[in-house]
Image (cartoon, rainbow, N blue to C red; front, side, top):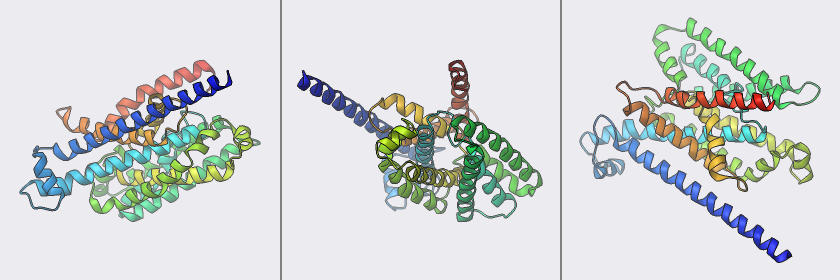
Length: 343
């Protein structure tokens, strides 16, 4: 009987592992297909060999400029920003055990937005300065929300409500900055606030790429501890997890990634909010969905950008498409949580 039970458990674990490998591999393959589509499609559709030759450094009339200067930076920005948004959103939702506890809803991206808009319309700077200011503002926002939500005891519900209030205040500050900003700076600020891959340049991408390569592995390594934190403070402590140290590392890594991604592409709506639940539904229980969440985020951004470019008569920024996809889910989630008494 004991051997049968052990065999049943091992068989279940192997089945869940195969499902995780299949889902993750499928999401990675979809990301590759979407990346190829981003490079091939545009006002002119170039043959595959011309795109490969242009990427290898060979001069191909028309294709070299379009692929290397316009399409490649746009594709890389969407891929890495989407991955960063997906992992960071999933980390907050899992760690705080609430699907509403993601950087978009609780004001972290709004903090980064204030810093970025201030740099654009007041200081007239861009690039590394915007990235550094966004990270500092994002961390400061997290600290402020956490301090205000402490009270006599920490409450996730209180943190979310305070985060929503902080977000409203920061959004008002963004509106004020736009009112007092110089007219020539407003188009860039509005385009950035919408969440867009338009105008992405290779020299703006190193901070984003480095942040993903540095902080994503930290979150992936801590993925097992992240799943344990979902069980609650006492359970995680009894299982040997240093909850304070783990939370600090997870929050710092997530905020750095999402702040730099926000500085690069703008606050692309609902990607951080949708990626975790979609990945969790696809992967199922038993294995970490950190990597799948990042891949879901990348696929959402790349697919939404392609839809915004080619599905309509007019071209729309990626943030508008993801907003259309995410808003109904947010309303559905609020209604469901209200019925369960979780709000």
